[in-house]
Length: 158
Image (cartoon, rainbow, N blue to C red):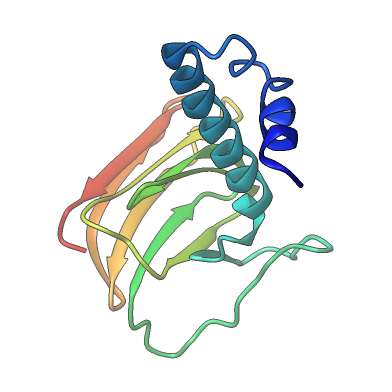
């Protein structure tokens, strides 16, 4: 393609049509952001750094891991007999979590801080507990018995 053909193609792209330098700069920044957003959305589902283990019957298609005899990394547990929902944060990740019954989440790359919160989805007086474990030892724990109560904890000892 000739140089003249390249110029006419570029002149058809929004942000480059006028030839004004600041409009072209804004266009490059905007198009770069859009590309990063699309790439991020495409690879969002490939993050496997947190896998779930469940003490209740696993759902079809759910990612579950076999429990090891001696945990070697960081784990987060939600202990509650009923339905709950919450959020799990580690490194630069924040994930919504929910379930019925107790669940354990393995964190393969915790970063500097790990945090967990969970809220009861009923008005029972049963105890909801959230825990952070390192090599099988509880390093942070909080509980609630309040109706629709929230328990949250975090740790930098990971």
